[in-house]
Image 1: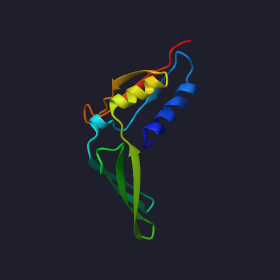
Image 2: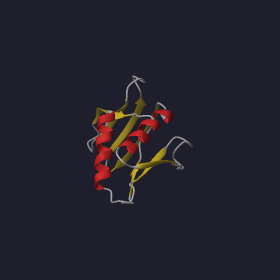
Image 3: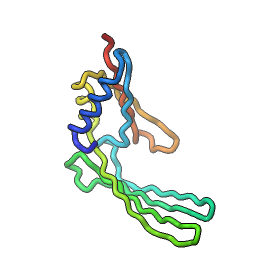
Length: 135
Protein backbone atom coordinates (compact mmCIF):
# COMPACT_ATOMS: atom_id res chain seq x y z
CA UNK A 1 0.00 0.00 0.00
CA UNK A 2 1.92 2.98 -1.28
CA UNK A 3 -0.88 5.51 -1.71
CA UNK A 4 -3.49 6.92 0.63
CA UNK A 5 -6.15 5.35 -1.61
CA UNK A 6 -4.57 1.89 -1.18
CA UNK A 7 -4.36 2.33 2.57
CA UNK A 8 -7.95 3.53 2.86
CA UNK A 9 -9.23 0.57 0.82
CA UNK A 10 -7.46 -1.86 3.15
CA UNK A 11 -9.00 -0.09 6.14
CA UNK A 12 -12.45 -0.24 4.54
CA UNK A 13 -12.03 -3.98 4.02
CA UNK A 14 -10.99 -4.42 7.66
CA UNK A 15 -13.99 -2.38 8.80
CA UNK A 16 -16.44 -4.51 6.78
CA UNK A 17 -14.95 -7.72 8.21
CA UNK A 18 -14.84 -6.52 11.81
CA UNK A 19 -17.88 -7.26 13.95
CA UNK A 20 -19.60 -4.40 15.82
CA UNK A 21 -17.74 -3.79 19.06
CA UNK A 22 -14.67 -5.58 17.67
CA UNK A 23 -11.23 -4.22 16.90
CA UNK A 24 -8.65 -4.37 14.14
CA UNK A 25 -4.93 -4.03 14.76
CA UNK A 26 -2.76 -2.10 12.31
CA UNK A 27 1.01 -2.44 12.74
CA UNK A 28 2.90 -0.24 10.26
CA UNK A 29 6.64 -0.85 10.12
CA UNK A 30 7.06 2.92 10.23
CA UNK A 31 5.01 6.07 10.44
CA UNK A 32 6.51 9.22 8.96
CA UNK A 33 7.35 10.57 12.43
CA UNK A 34 9.49 7.59 13.50
CA UNK A 35 11.05 6.60 10.16
CA UNK A 36 14.84 6.35 10.25
CA UNK A 37 17.01 5.08 7.41
CA UNK A 38 19.26 2.21 8.34
CA UNK A 39 20.71 -1.19 7.64
CA UNK A 40 20.34 -4.67 9.03
CA UNK A 41 22.00 -7.95 8.21
CA UNK A 42 21.92 -11.62 8.95
CA UNK A 43 22.45 -15.10 7.65
CA UNK A 44 22.22 -18.81 8.22
CA UNK A 45 24.06 -22.00 7.27
CA UNK A 46 22.50 -25.45 6.97
CA UNK A 47 23.42 -28.69 5.24
CA UNK A 48 26.27 -27.14 3.21
CA UNK A 49 24.16 -24.25 1.98
CA UNK A 50 24.15 -20.71 3.33
CA UNK A 51 22.75 -17.25 2.96
CA UNK A 52 23.98 -13.82 4.02
CA UNK A 53 21.87 -10.74 3.54
CA UNK A 54 22.07 -7.00 3.91
CA UNK A 55 18.98 -4.82 4.08
CA UNK A 56 19.16 -1.08 3.46
CA UNK A 57 16.10 1.04 4.28
CA UNK A 58 16.01 4.59 2.95
CA UNK A 59 13.68 7.28 1.65
CA UNK A 60 14.67 8.69 -1.76
CA UNK A 61 11.86 11.31 -1.68
CA UNK A 62 10.74 12.50 1.77
CA UNK A 63 7.87 14.44 0.16
CA UNK A 64 5.98 11.36 -1.11
CA UNK A 65 4.30 8.44 0.67
CA UNK A 66 6.90 5.71 0.06
CA UNK A 67 10.27 4.46 1.20
CA UNK A 68 12.58 1.81 -0.23
CA UNK A 69 14.09 -1.36 1.18
CA UNK A 70 16.93 -2.80 -0.89
CA UNK A 71 18.16 -6.30 -0.05
CA UNK A 72 21.39 -7.93 -1.22
CA UNK A 73 21.64 -11.70 -0.82
CA UNK A 74 24.70 -13.93 -1.07
CA UNK A 75 23.46 -17.50 -1.65
CA UNK A 76 25.89 -20.42 -1.31
CA UNK A 77 24.94 -23.78 -2.79
CA UNK A 78 26.13 -27.15 -1.50
CA UNK A 79 28.80 -27.32 -4.21
CA UNK A 80 30.32 -24.07 -2.91
CA UNK A 81 29.16 -21.79 -5.70
CA UNK A 82 27.90 -18.41 -4.57
CA UNK A 83 25.51 -16.14 -6.39
CA UNK A 84 24.29 -12.64 -5.62
CA UNK A 85 20.68 -11.48 -5.82
CA UNK A 86 19.12 -8.04 -5.34
CA UNK A 87 15.53 -7.45 -4.27
CA UNK A 88 13.78 -4.08 -3.91
CA UNK A 89 10.62 -3.40 -1.95
CA UNK A 90 8.73 -0.11 -2.11
CA UNK A 91 6.54 0.40 0.97
CA UNK A 92 4.05 3.02 2.08
CA UNK A 93 5.02 5.70 4.57
CA UNK A 94 2.21 7.78 6.07
CA UNK A 95 2.05 10.19 8.96
CA UNK A 96 0.39 9.20 12.22
CA UNK A 97 -2.23 11.88 11.55
CA UNK A 98 -3.02 10.33 8.15
CA UNK A 99 -3.45 6.87 9.72
CA UNK A 100 -5.78 8.26 12.38
CA UNK A 101 -7.77 10.38 9.92
CA UNK A 102 -8.29 7.54 7.47
CA UNK A 103 -9.26 5.06 10.18
CA UNK A 104 -11.79 7.57 11.51
CA UNK A 105 -13.17 8.31 8.04
CA UNK A 106 -13.95 4.63 7.41
CA UNK A 107 -15.79 4.41 10.75
CA UNK A 108 -13.23 3.13 13.26
CA UNK A 109 -12.36 4.77 16.57
CA UNK A 110 -8.56 4.61 16.41
CA UNK A 111 -6.00 4.73 19.22
CA UNK A 112 -2.19 4.81 19.04
CA UNK A 113 -0.41 2.36 21.33
CA UNK A 114 3.37 2.40 21.86
CA UNK A 115 5.00 -0.93 21.00
CA UNK A 116 8.11 -1.77 22.98
CA UNK A 117 10.26 -4.80 22.20
CA UNK A 118 13.78 -5.76 23.25
CA UNK A 119 14.92 -5.86 19.62
CA UNK A 120 13.58 -2.40 18.76
CA UNK A 121 14.86 1.04 19.65
CA UNK A 122 12.53 2.58 22.26
CA UNK A 123 9.93 4.83 20.64
CA UNK A 124 10.55 3.43 17.15
CA UNK A 125 7.32 1.45 16.74
CA UNK A 126 3.64 1.89 17.45
CA UNK A 127 0.42 0.05 16.83
CA UNK A 128 -2.95 1.42 15.87
CA UNK A 129 -5.92 -0.22 17.56
CA UNK A 130 -9.06 0.52 15.57
CA UNK A 131 -12.34 -0.22 17.35
CA UNK A 132 -15.56 -0.63 15.43
CA UNK A 133 -18.47 0.99 17.29
CA UNK A 134 -21.10 -1.39 18.67
CA UNK A 135 -24.47 -1.22 16.95
